[in-house]
Length: 149
Image 1 (cartoon, helix red, strand yellow):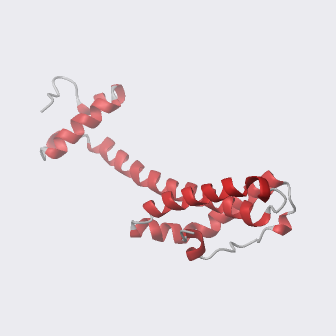
Image 2 (image 1 turned 60 degrees about the vertical axis):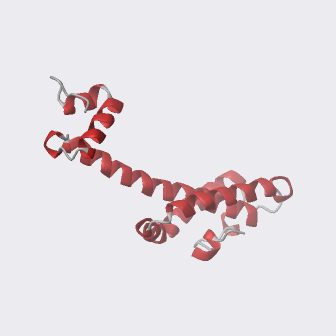
């Protein structure tokens, strides 16, 4: 075990985050709950959950942007279509990995429309096409968003 010496684990968190992680991991493995820095540990666990949700929204937004570009920016498709398809494939893969969690899948379902609105705004700004070209509501079913081909 890495000795805590005179320095408290809460102080180490502020001074050397990676050392704090190592010491916390060791304490958890040894089931030494009395020495844990509970305040920071709960903050870190909560932050991990927030990061997972942020990734779902981010990958979904990027996927929807590229789907919209591919389907609606007809003048640019001959030049950029292959790249957009590659990006669609990449973002689907990353999203599917996250959605192996049923909880994150339900979070995804609850946020599709909100994320679509942000993706739509980004595509309108990027393409400078009329907003009327892009559907106001998400035109893709969950199956279409996540399908592999």
